[in-house]
Length: 109
Image (cartoon, rainbow, N blue to C red):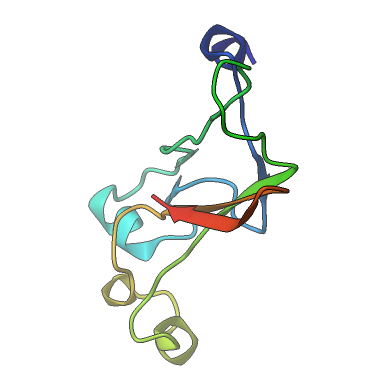
């Protein structure tokens, strides 16, 4: 990607079922805010510098997942798609980075 080369960075692989943090088909709260509209978009990006200027070791394993937080936890299973179950109009992503010099570092945005 052009933005990665400009930033001298790499982007972790996105794993899991969800690939977009803004998704009207997966988030009833978002769909209720935009009736009749359908869209999917990734809002938050995570980049890892690949510059050798830093003293931190590069991760040997890294990936991100889009989370789908709901409350109560089984709300959608009990009630079906329901905007009251959703905690936000968009989903956060959680990224895991592992390097040989450190334990797993997990960061959520």
